[in-house]
Amino acid sequence: MKRFLLFLGLLVFAAGCSMDSPTSENESGGDNGEGSDEDVVVGVSISTLNNPFFVTLRDGIEEAAEERGYEVRVVDAQDDSSKQVNDIEDLVQQGVDYLIINPTDSSAVSGSVESANSSDIPVVTVDRSVDSGEVAAFIASDNIEGGEMAAQFIVDELGEGAVVAELEGVPGASATRERGEGFHNIADDALDIVTSQTANFNRSEGLDVTQNILQANSNVEAIFAHNDEMALGALEAADDNVLVVGFDGTDDARASVENGELSATIAQQPDLMGVTAVETVESLINGDDVDEEIKVELELVSQ
Image 1 (cartoon, rainbow, N blue to C red):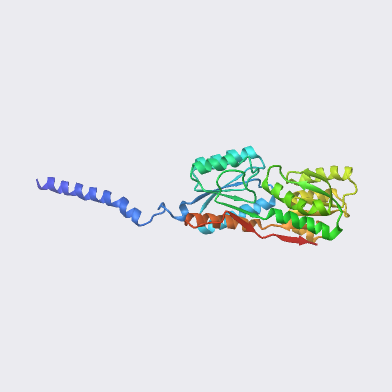
Image 2: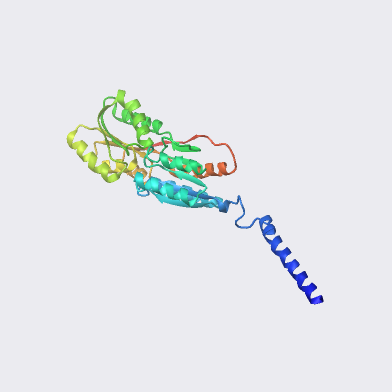
């Protein structure tokens, strides 16, 4: 009988321990405790990592996220809208907590944003907006103002009526639309635009398209490219008498300006954009209000 009572006591003691253990573990706030920074997973979709500007943007995101203990999962769309759609769907299926998207095409990615909305995943867009879907915040330079700055620089350097060509970015991207809009706000009245052609934000295409433009229009005095990669490509095709203005302020472009090659670049701050995106995620985590549109300051860098 004594042995039976002793055995029964041990069973009761063991049951009590097994019931107390999960409660005490939760109360202690273990590694998997709800709400800890280590639990936050941020999915990041970049339009292309073949462009130094977006590499710097990614680095800014990763560094800011690491400081806060967030996990970051980065995917590279490689300038392919279909791939970006699939990449974002994969991140949604993985159950990331937040999405930071740098769209390849502002329209094509809209369905993916709506998919994230349906899964209650907050979305922050960077550098380029989306045409539809709910976005918590859009972080970018004022692309319209930057286009105006580029046109005004050409007017100031060459005077009104100067003959210019425009290299446009990826069709459908908000940055393409807005930089072009700003440029034309000034140039349509003050400059002679002989052609506007896309080179898809790509350096090699910038070279090829510029060669064709100059063959057909030998009197071109200046070229405005919607990004530095195209501007640097244009620079290879143009002679020293053609003024070339880019947009982004990448390290390569700044070095080219310092060397007296590229005439100017409208400099963005992609690292600050990345940091601001993560700061916005942090505000959302804390339940704070965030501005729907956050502008990052531009700077004219010229010879």
